[in-house]
Length: 337
Ligand code: KG4
Ligand code: ZN
Image (cartoon, helix red, strand yellow):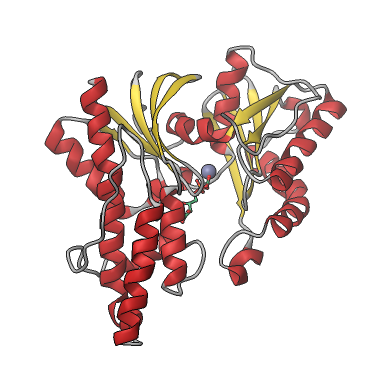
């Protein structure tokens, strides 16, 4: 029998618990946090408190949906970073408490590795998995990286943002347009009705496989300010075109470096992961690039793009196979190098 693993994710503003048997998903429960809506971003203090409220019912539900008891589990995997310290502490402390009470081994999981290994979650959809080695464009609210993935637990960062993450660019530009947080999904929806060629925004020139998004954010802000001076209704009158053009620029920036990475490594197995990989424009563009360039592309199902514990549980399974367990003295890390 393959091991049964409980996964716990609490790195940002979603409290999630999942159960897997090997890589087979048995349950995945996610509680979002609406408390941040009024603030235009995640408020760390409120996130920690909401995790405290959610963690016990979310874990109970995950076990119940999987049809198992705590006594059936083989190990407890938890996100130990990167993320918000107060949020991480809730998941880590809960996992330690459970381990102390039950003697279950603990597995510390890197959240970013979790996003990448979301491609190996087996559920009823039975999607094909990327073959090793593959390249993964990891695009989330906090990170933008190109990874060369050699095996489940071995990967190299071959490119990354030198300032803002792609998700941050979506969220910050959405904010200046007066759109709610998180802005990525809202821009994605509005962009579907807009003209991608209506406005042109400057693309960064950063060496190697690295990215930069802070310049785009700033030039977008100044462009809107200038236009609003001429026409105070500029944003509301042009919202779909603004979203479509901005999103198009972000996608072009992302895929340009990915194309370079393919050239440099010769690897044509290409996956995307992280919250921004839910973006319809990015998904379509990647499919088209794949067909044009002979890449084998892998798009995670939408439910595993944003933060979830299924990816943490599966990553826990790979770590358990490798004998990587953690001690009770494990501490969460806000940043992981
Ligand atoms: O991976 P994730 O849930 O959390 C982090 O680890 O950061 O990613 C959240 C980010 C946010 O910036 C959000 O705006 C972005 O993913 N996002 C999207 C879409 N859905 C979520 N960005 C663009 N289009 C989307 N459909
Ligand atoms: Zn994430």
